[in-house]
Length: 168
Image 1 (cartoon, one colour):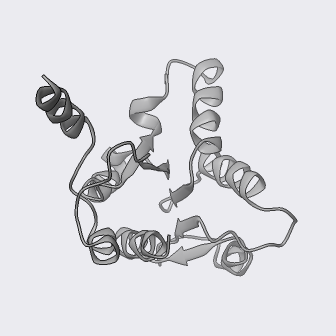
Image 2 (image 1 turned 180 degrees about the vertical axis):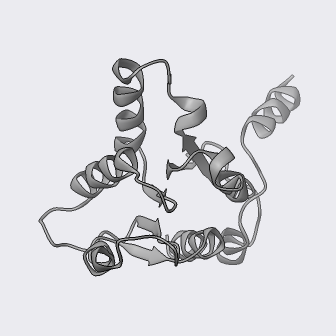
């Protein structure tokens, strides 16, 4: 009976971890009772950005909050509090505003920044923003770089997250 319960728990806990986790801890298994690291995926819907969120799915030590799945998108009365609750409860935020206007993404980034920093102007080490070469306006990039890590691609964002996780 205990073996069956343990087997079910193991199924619930994703035992496939990132290379960085394996390298640091010598195993791809999370210790029993370990909390997964919460990461909020802010930004464009998958259908408009080549399924960008799915590219993070193999990082087994993380529990990704995807507003398209985890928030009730019926109306602003439901998704605004759901999304911000996901932002508040996350340890990391990866933002992909794409190349179009992304007001909601920037609200989420600002809220995360406010939750995770102690004073204005502080660098937020747990914030990763994907800033495509084609994104405008270019003049705002220097401002954005002061908030957190800025990368050019989804692949670079994944690498940065793995690097940050390996330092835990």
